[in-house]
Length: 256
Length: 357
Ligand SMILES: Nc1ncnc2c1ncn2[C@@H]1O[C@H](COP(=O)(O)OP(=O)(O)OP(=O)(O)O)[C@@H](O)[C@H]1O
Ligand SMILES: [Mg+2]
Image (cartoon, rainbow over all chains, first blue to last red; front, side):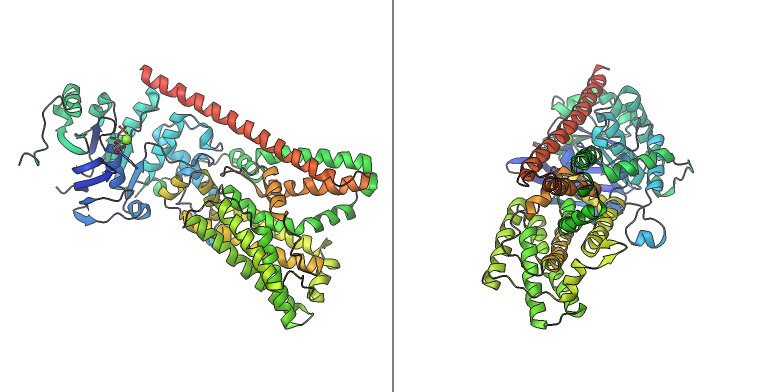
């Protein structure tokens, strides 16, 4: 089976920091892949590379088996790839629905839509529905998101990504600011999204969460993927060992 | 494909929710507060000045005097919401009025034909300055303050070079009559034009995608970029529009005074910016309203006429406006800081809850 999204030998340096060092990555449709690694291992940089937000020094990206050049966020969004960034990337002065639909506003019907008017009611209704589906506790649909709690904002960012992703969704530490119930909701939603046939890439420092939802776990260290595990036959100790370098591992490619 | 395109729960929209947000968007908390200030000022002068102040003719006179500033204020409101600034509007107005007056002088007619050509020329030359500003801000990434300080100087300098510093008094009678005598629906001509521009500007800002992107760019430029908003193009359009409105303002100015005023617009930019900011548009971007700008324009104008009527030296107007400006921004900032503190507290609580488990 060809991975829906695959990275081969990606490299990118920031000054003398080799953020990505000839690293591979792959994810299949209908699969949850956890991407783990210590702080600064290069996880967020990998996500940026795979979502058209990073100029690469070298390497190749394949989408549905074909090489692609990711040049703009619009292009990546049109491919059905969505990202929840670690910093959420919401506009704090806009309300939840305005954020969910930012850049993809539903035009009003007829000539009004052609003039640039929007169907705010419909956008608000649909945004509400996607928050409810996620179980996100968005209490006010009219307050600016900047006035909301970290968890609420995270819920909004996740709902936005999941709502638009048809092929791949990246979640960079999506549960970091969430309460117990909300974390559970997000993990349940990840499973639901996977069952829809979407590939989910989950970045998380919470090993129990990773082992609960992931089908495979890929470990990064110092800018490269050093190991891939099947979640079912691995343990927290093994993952932590690989992450910190206490455990000698090899991706196979390097050994060959 | 994706849920947002397919899910339609048919859930009824909470009417109150949408209604409330619409009013809130149209007005904004700060502009409601500042409207209260305006009302207090009006009541004060109505009591002390009596019918001399509180009359339809006085208010029509005030709106006529505000017309040009209001047209400029529409553009500047957009610019400031993007967290930009445009210091050049006064000079661009002067420049455009000089070019338009030159063209109308060369054409020589006194009718609407000449006037309309003059209007077009003014809008195009104002728009050209706006485009230059927008291009340098968006593409060359020079701070808006510096870009527009530069174009302020260059536009004024060129206006002086072109005229040799001598004002041109070549305004077709059609245009002058429009400002002096014509009324549309009982409203003086210039005030009517300004009203239309303000209403259209308000609708574009608060009801259309263009307006939403304006707020988004000012709120979080990076977030807007990531979801595919063409941020650079948005900025260029906004500065271009502001310049073009300065061109329209130039024509209105010519109509009102029947001469260019090369030395007369040095404080126009600051007056307009002050009005926009008094009206609750945040210089940090992401927040503001057209309604607030209108209120912000009226406060200094009402103060000025009020002082004249009750016999206070009009110089006090400057003192009063300066105090209102700083007070308005101070109140705005404390409100904002309080909101932010609340959000941060929530976030910290959420995080400690997450780590506690
Ligand atoms: N824009 C940048 N400029 C300079 N250095 C960068 C930039 N982006 C990433 N880096 C560096 O690249 C390395 C990898 O960063 P990255 O954000 O990918 O780590 P991460 O695995 O996501 O870590 P964390 O778990 O802390 O989020 C770090 O050393 C970081 O300092
Ligand atoms: Mg990261």
